[in-house]
Length: 122
Image (cartoon, rainbow, N blue to C red; front, side):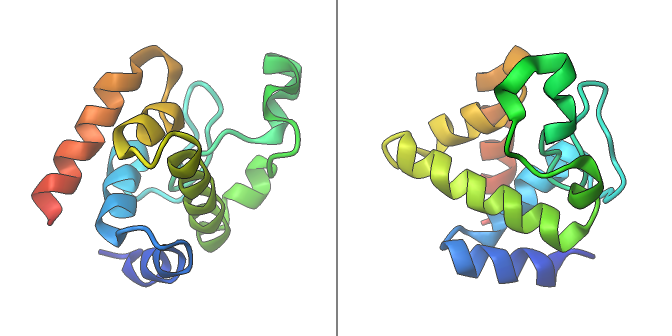
């Protein structure tokens, strides 16, 4: 995988299985570092940026800009840190953490898709 070394660096730092990070990246952007979704999510891990405050209010205030998130290492680092926070906030349950990471319109469907990719990667 093109982004393997970036994934490993950030996965090691935040103690997350690199195969899980790769699974999220696959589902989110297919490995396209320049991806921008219709909802405004940016980069490899499709993180929502602070640029969206006019559209979503303060929901994403304090987050990096889309320009910052277009840097692959920054994007993966920020997203893996956020994923680690979600994991700890949600009772150390990966399905719940991934549910909260993903798109609001398909949360458990998204979580289950990521988990299936992760299971196949182990």
